Image (cartoon, rainbow, N blue to C red; front, side, top):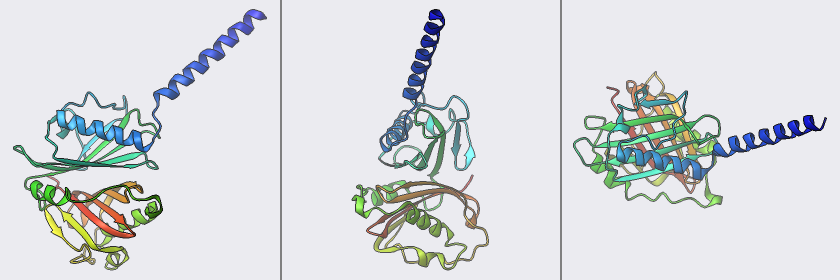
Length: 269
């Protein structure tokens, strides 16, 4: 009996140690952990080496411009000098969004990437989902885009002034709905000093020269990263209303009004 009790005790202890190790191996989905992985992604892009990324051993997907791709042959395999970058975090969806601009070199880029995980565990990446634009894409000029965006203020909002997830998602959806819904533009809380950067085209205020329906095909395949701390929503999508173009639309709301709009649109080649 004593021997049986001893063996059971050892088994219970071993199980407890195993559970502790499994728990410690997982990384809780916090703002800090999401942004840390986003930084490792940017470092990988700078070096052109992905061995520093903690990719899921199974069920990992790498996607460029809405198509599955080989990470070893994709944009991440190319070392790029990054002139500007910024990342946001969505602890509810356990996802991050990183935007960066590489304006020098033989092939400049403006890139938006969402990173996702299995469950709420940021210890391994399940999806790297990238929209990238380069020379020949819609309104593309990386140096002009850099000049506009580097002047923006993206400091965290005070807790009492942060828009809700619902408000942010509705703004992102309404923006993408403007091409199919004539009333969508009027539901967006435009700021009088809002700045819109579409590729390298600059518009201020944002509420001017907006589409009001006209297309029968909605912009679909929407993937969201919502960050209440900075008041932003990024939506990766297929810009189907104008012809199946891979697209990223990012919106920031400040003091209850839209402050910034960024778009990255590829031509789907």
